[in-house]
Amino acid sequence: MSLKAAIIPVTPLQQNCALLWDSETMEGAVIDPGGDAEWIAERVAEHQVKVAHILLTHGHIDHASGASLLKRLLGGVPIVGPGIEDKFLLDDLPNSGPRFGILDAEAVTPDRWLTDGETVTIAGRPFAVIHCPGHTPGHMVFVDAPGKVAIVGDVLFRGSVGRTDFPYGDGRALVTAIRTRLFPLGDDIAFLCGHGPGSSFGIERRTNPYAGDGAA
Image 1 (cartoon, helix red, strand yellow):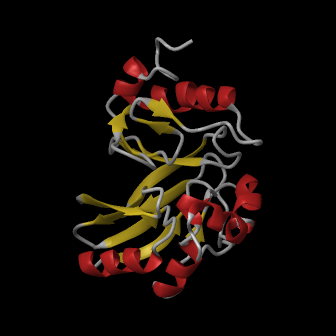
Image 2 (cartoon, one colour):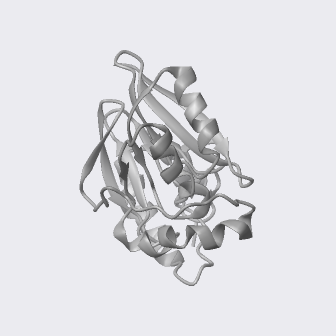
Image 3 (tube, helix red, strand yellow):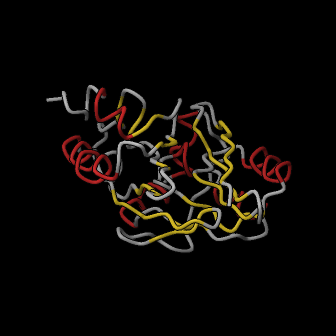
C-alpha cells in the first residue's frame, strides 16, 4: 500500500487542506477543507480519489468553513472531528468568516465527534487520534506511528507552534501536549501542518524555539 498526498492551499490564509489516498485502492480522505470547496472537489476528481470521509483537526474558519459544502459536493460523505470542545467555533463560522475574507463560510455539524485515544482510517491506514488542546480546546492530531506520518493541524509548525492568543487559548497546554504526546512518538515521524512546509518531530524537538529541548 502506497500513501499519496496532495496539498491544496485554500482561503486567503493559505491553509494546507490535505488530500490523502492509497494509490492501490484509491480510497482516501480530505483533511481540513477550510474553504474553496469547489476547488477541492476538482482536485479530488483529478486524482480520482474515492473520499471516505472529511476529517477536521479543529474548528477554526480556515480549516473547517468549506466542510459542509464539500460534503454535499462529494455525495454526502461524513464529516468526522474535531473534539466536541470546538463546537462553539464550528457553530460560529458564518459570523467569523467575513472577518477573514471568507464570505461563504457555513456552520458545520460533524457526523461524529472525536475523542482522545480513538483511531480513524485514512487511506486504509489506522491513525491514532491525539487530543492536543491549546490552540483550540478540541484540537485533534492524527498519527500513524508505524507509517511515520502525522497530520498536526495548527498545533506544531516548522520552527513554530500554534497561536494561543485567543480567549480560549492556552500556551502551557499546547507546549505540554507537543512535548509529552507528540515528540515521544518518535523523531522520525514526518508531519503535515496547517500552514507552510512540514517537518519532523525530531527536527522540531531539537530546534523549535517554542517547544523544543532548548525552549524555556
